[in-house]
Image 1 (cartoon, rainbow, N blue to C red):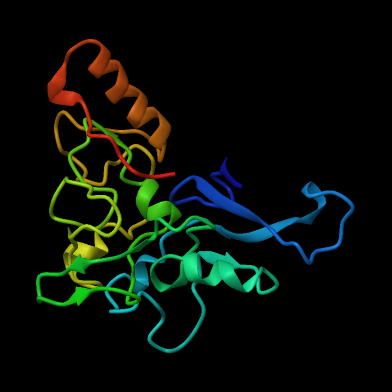
Image 2 (cartoon, one colour):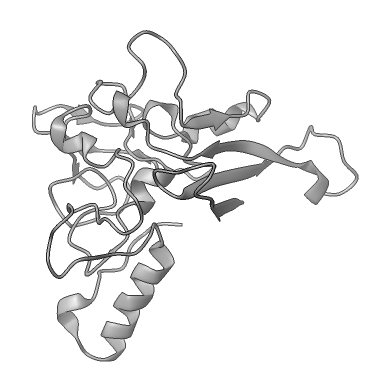
Length: 211
């Protein structure tokens, strides 16, 4: 269960705090709701580490804009995002069968942590001109199909891991005809559905296999 809070005090750069809760069968409580515990919180993309190959502090320090509950169930670690940024407990942050410009391929059990709560939601814009993942292509293949992504830690990749205010689109400030949607994916897909109903195919998105 995920909750996004609009909070310009706790998160002055992005204006949002993303939170996730996960069911822990071993937690104390009389009902299933009692056994939901915090998985973590994210209020920024840690852009100062966006140009490192693994997305982490090269000095070994913790991320500064993600907190992950050390008491969360172990299985949640496998669904964290790039550099262990919060992206859970969904598995859409990790991608399979990824190809990067260097020719490296992530296949089988070698998954690429390619996203995070805020890096994905910061791509909310209309019309949609950029991928939800750091990819040069707008296409969004089903998980397991070949997916071209930028090289982790490259300048292109780092563009998805910046702290933008909600009125600046991922495609860049100053782009005409693009409206940032303040991290709101639901609104982005709603606009596409409306245009589909109106027959305006130029602004209709393909179906996305996401949560």
